[in-house]
Amino acid sequence: MKKSLYLMLILFSFYTVSYSQIRKETQRNIINSYDRIEIDDKEIASMDKVKKLADQSKKIDFQQGVLRGLTMLQKIALMKNDYILSGKYSDEAEVLAEKLKNNSALSAIYLYRGKINIILDKLPEAEIILNKSLGYAEKIENPADRHIQLCRIYANFAGMYEGENDPKNWYVSTKKSLNAIETTPTNNLTEYQKSKYYYLYIFELMNMGSYYVYGQKPPDFNIAEKYFVKTLEFQTTAPKYFKICENDVYYAISGFYLEKGDYQKSIDYSQKLLEIEKTKSEPRNRLFAFNNMKNAYGFLKNTAEENKYMKLYTALNDSINFVEKRAIVHQSRDEIKKANVKNEQSKKTLLFYGGIVIVIIAFGSWVLVRRNNRILRKNYEAMIDRLKVESVQTENSTNAIHETEDNTQIEPDFTDDFEVSNKNLISAETEARILRRLSAFEKSDKFLRKDFTVSHLATHLNTNSKYLAEIIKNNKSQNFSNYINNLRINYIVHKLYNEPKYRECKISYLAEECGYASPQVFVLAFKKINGVTPSYFIQSLKEDEVLVYN
Image (cartoon, rainbow, N blue to C red; front, side, top):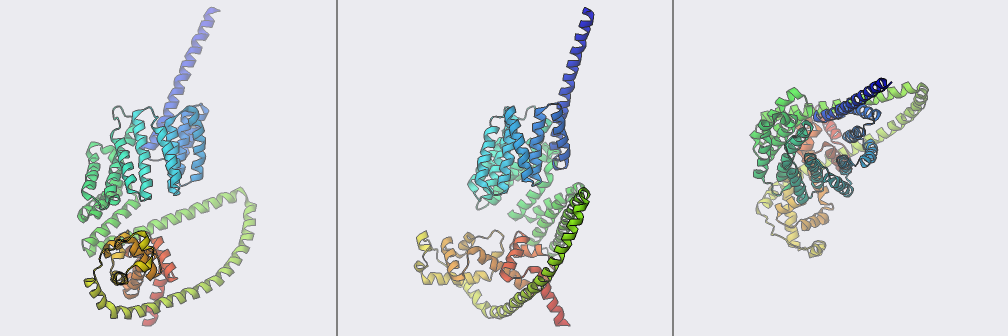
């Protein structure tokens, strides 16, 4: 009897130890799987796998595994721009993280919430949330994990301040982020920690360099270059990790040298980007390279190469837009198909009433289209009449304008806000001279600069910014932004009217030509000012040209 009892105890102990070992091994495998997904930077593609790992963790009551899955799902939903779903995972994760007192997870949860608020332009809320993330990060016990998380948080602060156009805090936050990663203890880093460490180190060096180019006024290209060169050192010191983000590095450095005016180096790094793209096949990186090379060759006055890369850029940009639109269409069709499978009767009902609605909409659209076409044609004809008049006026005033540009000098005007707000206190002589100078400026192409501000114009005219803004408001009947928009749109309208070669260019190129960073903003401004879209104007010019020749 005793022997049987001892045997049972031995077997039970063996079973308990074996089960415990198997359970620990399963938990390690789950964590390793999570790590591998992040190391390979495949979170979005692995969303279903992350869900399965979280479910597996629930089944074996592995709460840390469940928490890791929830925070990753929160991040993935954020990356997919599904902020509601991200919030759902965030709430679940927060409850569990507080229960487990997991400061690392709590910091990550608040960091992703802060990112959403930054994206939604809710910056005061974002600052509060990021500070909560910072508080939890400082409590993380593992020194390497703590430094890595602090680096990420300060990097998001820097991005927020950059968006607020606050260069001082942008610099301070970027410096803190870089310092956090530079002081990370690197002894005994895990593979997961190494991937995060090198990725963040490389990007924070680039962010620091970018600050000295785009944040500091005037730019300090020498200091910026030191940071970009230091980034390149990882090619030899940590090639495995550099390779993960080499596309971003070469693109950033190509853009830096373009801004600096070292156009050949910009071309060289764009070529490196194109070489890498051949193996990684990332069309948007190819698009970035084509754009930088197009601009660099333009500055070098190499028209043949500029045209070559302009055509490559335009063709690829159109192709990418087409693929993205097709993907949206396919996704919509798949969703419709799933809905039809679930309820065939609903489909028939929808089709019946949908048909009625379509008929009504079609008739209403026909009426609206006819009316809209008449309005568009009227606006177009008004543009043509105005252009004809302006062409004559331009010929008569060209010599006078040049004389004004050469001889007119504006003495500096320093007035306080009270004086600027009162037009009667601006001397008539000074105002007249500024207006003459403005007239000369309007005939130049300085307003085509993408980041042109009232400060730039005030510096050009050697006067006070607020003084200048008030004169523009009182004499041009518009604010500075509308004033510049009118000049840019008028410039491209004249190009399209007088130089037929521009009618063959893509909208994206026309937008860049007249100083817009976004084609969408360009189209909206063109329509607002002229009452027709650029496409309509171009097509009408072509049709009128055909009628003339026939």
